Length: 303
Image (cartoon, rainbow, N blue to C red; front, side):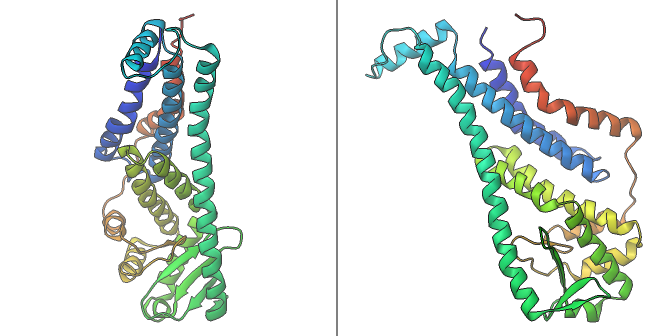
């Protein structure tokens, strides 16, 4: 039995229905690291399912193949006798999934290198214009708007504007620096690059757009939580408010930005950790979801 219909249905469910269910859930903002893992697990599952669907379509059942051959003959295309060419089918079965995998890897490399180049150029400018502050563990840059961001990578920098130094208290500045350190230590730029790569390859699928947007938001929440370990809610919230309007250079990660209002409400509102049962269940689903396309393609017990 050809598994293409089941795989196509699963791929559509993950690509179109699953994002809506996750967006409506209340727990992701309480456990942003786990939620980010779920979004990436869905992306991996969708990619595997799409590759397996392509494989199954390239190796169709006899009656399906005959129908397609007849249709192509009707359209005036000569596809030979009505039987599949084993060599052509094998090449398609391997080639199409390989193209999907190669496109994802190439897109990830492209986004990583492009962001690295932008950060490198900006880092040179920052080192030239700004001055290093040992007290802040950051580079202070002349800029009239309160701002703070990090340039992650092999030679990371945390950049704070002199307007932020003047306007924020020492504790608020420390919370901001802690937030940016979390981005660097967690290699969040690579997580964002993976989400961007997935979106570039499957741009027409809602999952890719939501995964990219939610990953960016959740990574900021993860960094917020890191800062909240050693600083109060009010201290971080005030710093975020002051920097909400600041612009972020390409390739950088910032404490302000377009998601600042959502994060402010989260920081100042009641925050409850998810119940251990929910946490464990979601973690188990996160590990299992990438394997589901294989089970759909090869159901247990079928020879």
